[in-house]
Image 1: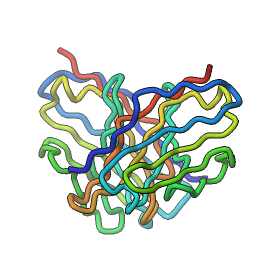
Image 2: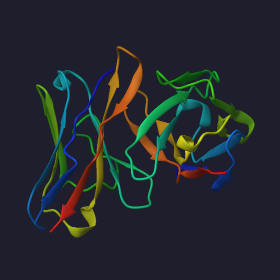
Image 3: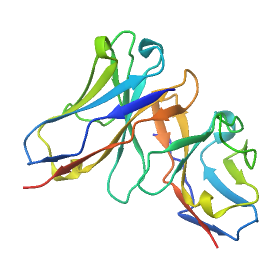
Length: 108
Length: 118
């Protein structure tokens, strides 16, 4: 089955840019979705198709996807951005949705 | 507005069964599939499968045992997850989520904690 690899943690100072990666074989050829999960809350879709922001998600959130790595980019990071972030793709070989292991973003 | 509201926490004994509900509102229920996602304590998200709310056909993730069954009642816009022969490893928060055709899951229930302990 398809495996998505995320770093367990990323730390960034407030006001700086956070980059959270999601690695997978030829991930650049599929659509990647990103979710944010704050403590004791349900996940929330923050990027659809790598770059589409749902209503209410600020422009500070953007993404890229090429080759074997997709990246969630959060500009001007704020304390409220602290959360676990998950990438997700559709694995057409198994007809399963697959989540990455998640990355804990810490704002210093 | 779109809402998915799940049933409350459950404390269950091993070997018993539990049925969790997920009630949708704010949209046409049969136009969006519903997914189920498991999150064990301190762990990440694991997709379990989805149910076509138009046909009622469930699709389960590879490796998911027959102890897990998705169902629905369109008359009350509600989907269900039933887990039988509960085991300690079933202890987790279970989320339902609305499908966006061709896209991700754009609305989530608040989660239902199922604790399995003797």
